[in-house]
Image (cartoon, rainbow over all chains, first blue to last red; front, side):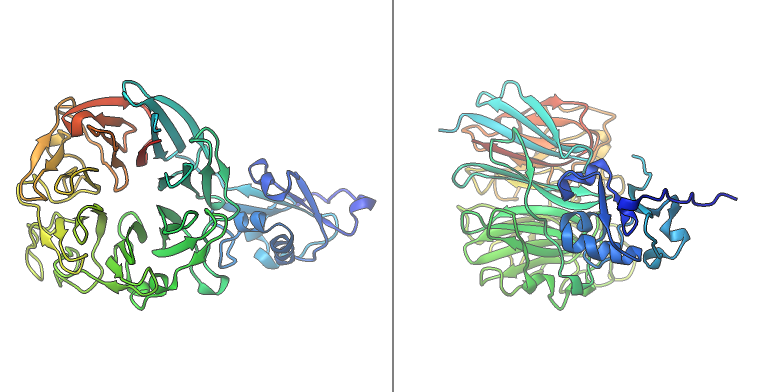
Length: 105
Length: 370
């Protein structure tokens, strides 16, 4: 059974989680590929993004606060739909990855 | 002094801009801007220094409005796109129309789900227009095949006409504060009542500043053979109003089909208008032979314009905003197809030529002489 790899311990990041931003959305956060936030759940990450990077938040969530249908959010290697959705708990060192869902056409 | 003709071509894969000298002999293409993202609405705002706007409807990351101040050589995102208030409960699915407002930087934007937004700063910030967006009918409108979209915004002084699919025609006479359904004579084919108060699948509305009060409408026709409740409803597809849209009458007689999407008025003659009839089932041209049809008497009679267009085996759709006409002395029509062809109809549509034949599927075409 595959398990999420244990995130690498890093003193500089020990109190934070890392948000990996795809290239297509980096204009929304000053070009940053990664953001470091202090948050204990995915919902808290999104709330923090809404405050600090509203354009990035709006690219992830629509006006109702729902994660857009074609956006995938992962905690480490797990899609959050396979965990607790926005209530997925985070621990320091976790990596949240934002990815456009696979689609064609 | 106007020196060039510019086309904004909204496609499934981004915005293309085509430019030609006033001779229109050949067009040079640039773009795509907003590459890979569908563009359903475009506006060339020629009030003052020209500003170009386009919607960029990203199915992954949401909506943007693109703006150019250098004649479409470069585009940047405006500071924000229309968005519903958080407590509204609706989420923007698409941007279907962009129109110039009364003041220099005022813009109007029609979206899906059908609602209207207004900007007073050239698209950097937007506010919901509650008179239509929160109209008591709004939660009863149903989406058509293209979605529940507000696709037409026509301003005539304090009057504002809106086309909604499927909501019908709504009229404001106080600058856009209050709106009322104005659909007398506008038929609906997909419900038992052939002439409901609202809920018609209006496809496009056009007017002309030289003919105040007159409007032309391409409605969702193709119901002449309906044999269910309410009975057949022939010729409900192409309509005219002479009282600011309060009542409408058919002008479809003489057309091969009353179904279609775009409707365009000649820039110098309010009696001359153009439609592109489609088969209602396939939404392609009758007999697979494309043709634009022109009336020069306000819809009293129609002539087929097809010289240069394919004579057979042609199966494309021309969408509601994919036909436009320029304002040169002998104006040219332009239409884009879902098969990625961009056609020019010189001399008011007398002679057609394919300018580009391998573009992405085309959603909208706007032209200006700047």
